[in-house]
Length: 450
Figure 1 (cartoon, rainbow, N blue to C red):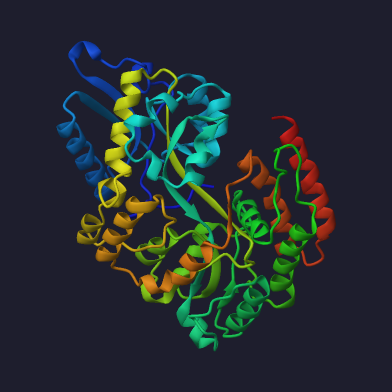
Figure 2 (cartoon, rainbow, N blue to C red):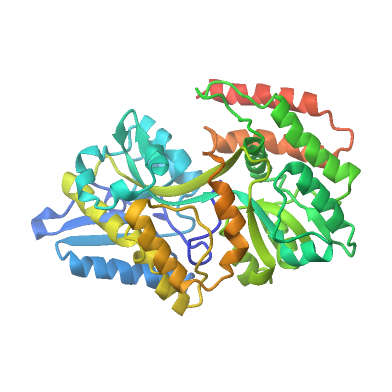
């Protein structure tokens, strides 16, 4: 699933807005060399409604063009950056921009349908490439060839309300590390009454399947086999996930009576101070404050309970197979300038973000290694304006977890698992073993069609 925000502010990302656009409006392979300039089209420009993000993005692009007068950058905006309803059609129709936004889970598919340019011969033109975390680079590496460049990443953790922890007699500096501890803490928080919910989870719009996957990773399980051919959800680990949710919902009454929740519902509960815990990525925190009424001092983040693994995701850019060598080189330079220079650019100019009261210091997974990481962390720390101590447990604990990306055909798989999770949370007598058996068969069918 897509995470919910830019590193600085609320999500504001876009794509070329219509399949009816001519090829020259997106990616055409025409680099306009006759004018002496290399012209590239790029997407994911924030829409005008996101004024701050848009101003940052446009200013950074203008600065890039000034520093590279031989390159003309044509930016496209819409919402969202990648619309699942049109992404495959744009791919098939050759309508992608020269440099186009993708989720981590798109990489293999874009390569398989032969719409991605091989960037391997041009990596020397990307100054930052070797400084990017190898596990993120590997996501865009297929059969030894590089087809994309990571831009951001996220990993799931446990957001919790420190004020409710204190009120329930729990130590907010010692968040739950196991699912048994989550259950015990949720029960104490729910006992506060007045509509307070101890733990909430999603169970609709594919979001329940997404969280089930994260919870299964945390137990050491998986949704799909390593070769991507068989479901692996009819297992003791998956049973443990559902049994824990069932018991919190029906035995402890710590999840509240309202179910079939989606992300906005849960964020509203947390922002209003009526929820103790839920699973999320760090980018939820500014949304909870800026949109849902929360307070930074009350919001903390812990690593995924269970201690075995966590779900990671993120995004990056790939290049149209129609892009010329000159366009690929220009696009890589643009990525370096916009996103991949530590402490600078659209995502890294922390001083600018702080000046405009955007949150700095949230615990995003580190994109860089070595000297680049040290520079990025130094500039971030110097401009932090959120209580970074509230996230230290997350940063410390994440190093000990296996980081796993979403399964193949994630949205279809999540749709199946939505039904599994929602049944457990809405039916007290739900047969967990039967639900997992049925889900396994449906996922096998999805994988067999691929």
